[in-house]
Length: 317
Image 1 (cartoon, rainbow, N blue to C red):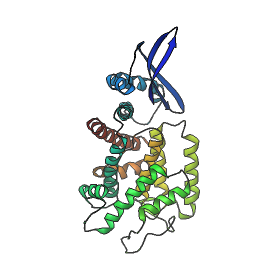
Image 2 (cartoon, rainbow, N blue to C red):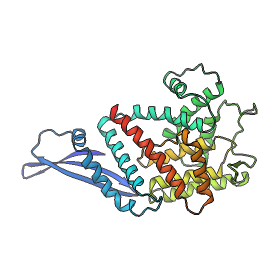
Image 3 (tube, rainbow, N blue to C red):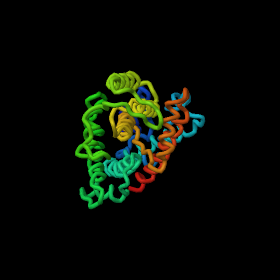
Image 4 (cartoon, helix red, strand yellow):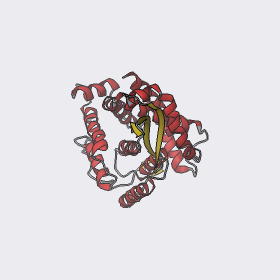
């Protein structure tokens, strides 16, 4: 949050630009003196005219925390992502175009997320459905998937809570009125049979609810002290290991991961469909090995790509 602060001392008005933000459970304040006895100053104009300086100031304040991280072999990508995240938030303050940008993100997220899970619906059809609410695309089940995904994206932003009931609700929204490959409807609730994903066992059905409760409690205990991207990526990795449902685990997992990022002031990310094979491999490596660095590296690369794409879009809107 940015604002103009005016303090009067001995009939002299001292005008400053102030930006407040929170990071890793701590509150920070950037204050830049503008001048004395200035009649009108707009915080958006000041932020626009001093964009790089203010963004760099915030990054420096975050640096003491970032230097302690051991997520990847190349720390540069962490600083690059943090800088882009700061710049995106500053652009939002200047342009106030969040609603438009999040609509564009939803189009790309739904297309990529559904295609990762096997949908063949083209990006232009997803865009058409979101923009017009209509589609004549031949695969009606995939059209319904898009409608459901729109509702799920809305639910994540407005109604989702970090509890088991919300996770079940998210699954229900995504699978509502859909037909499985065997012609039947999606079963309600958690899986009743074990599932193996990429040749890896997942949590047995009778342990799913306990495992989710444990994951949710761990998230709540660490959400103020753990680096937000690590927090989101760790949640996603464990969630995919639990694999609580017969299907839609990837889609529910990526939505919840983005909810974590948005709750901590970060722009959500895409896992691009063209990187689906590398994504599944990264999850496997993260679950198999004692070090998660390859998994973190992949997710940070997807973050970098997303943030760069949308940084450009936000600037141009």
